[in-house]
Image 1: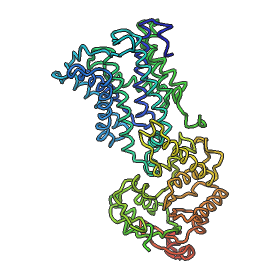
Image 2 (image 1 turned 90 degrees about the horizontal axis):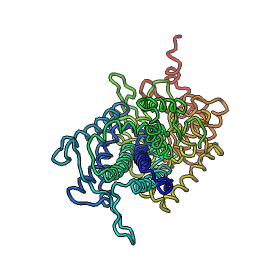
Image 3 (image 1 turned 90 degrees about the vertical axis):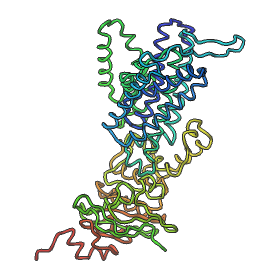
Length: 300
Length: 258
């Protein structure tokens, strides 16, 4: 799949696929928070925005190039995850959903109103595309071509997926799932629940921050309305559709929901209606998601 | 030698109701103490106060023989780290995890792999994973769940889920094991197997505090029995002495009318 641009270099379709893979990156990160740890987060787009603005501002104000900016973009978004989690995770269930929803909106509105730094509703313009030094060819600018971003996002998804698989099979991942399954029993087994929830938010936030920086570099322009509540809900839908806690599921869910609107173009103005119907049908047939682990089946 | 666990004048009030009323109880190293009493006597509340699930209104809990440490005010996971493991009256296994994973969770306090170790799968992390899995397999065998390690916890029959919970508690290598009505819902054969299992734990030198309604279970295994009624400790002593205590009979059967 990584070699797709060589055999099928249709730029528009590649672009749709790149966007879907960017969603996959987000779904992988949110899966750590919602899927494994069971913390319902409705403001995940905020971490994506923080990563995008971190790179945008570093690039425009301080002249930072793309590659080294990835570190602060991930770090700042991850720190926000921990910082917001500290007060937010003291509430549970429905209340937590409301608090995280509020966080998502506050970040978007803050970026809209802090005009002096963020350019307000017009956003940041003229962010540099990534540049790569290619042996023998000198410096290669990603520019506005489709294929280089496809490769970049592909690599990021593969790395993030590998990391998520390792985490989910580790002591940390098991503790996250234990918290999701039964918080009290987890605490009595010696698991520091708050600390591990913060860790999940930090890791999930960092992955979204990374995705945000890639997004900003690809678009060259970012505005606050790219990071609205609908995006948070879409990514959540991808995680749920793929199956809570499943790494494969998060990627497939993102690819399906990310490209479905394009595949349904034939329905013309009824496109989003068909999209909604497709989601209902899938969830009706497989309530545990495409790759979800049903608690009633034997271990896969 | 000071006791392993010492509960001093523990009181838990819910509004005007005393769930626990100045209960004092101590458990010596290696001892098995039965905690009995009618429903609502405060037995589970006592467990919750000892394990940090609930914060008592008043009183103290001290744990440790060499350097006793107060437990009130510590969080549940901190108390678990200090060597107290428990099971629950209503089974609380991790339903969507395999039997093996459930027990491996119990090794959390005995392992150290963090974010970096897990991400890079360091040799140290691998070694720890193997150690935890081996330990969990051994414990599954010990409680009679050999061959069921890959079964989803929710797919196990009720009696086996109870044993799975005990295996998970044992995985942390606790100094004190609290069992909350482990025989509830078991059939007579399973109860007999449970008594044997607890007997083997005693033989290993484990200190156990057990809440149990079933006298056929609690009497043969307990070195000492304490009786709670309406949040107060009304009797304590050898199983036989407690069984013949008129106050205990009254608590269970009501006031004689003759």
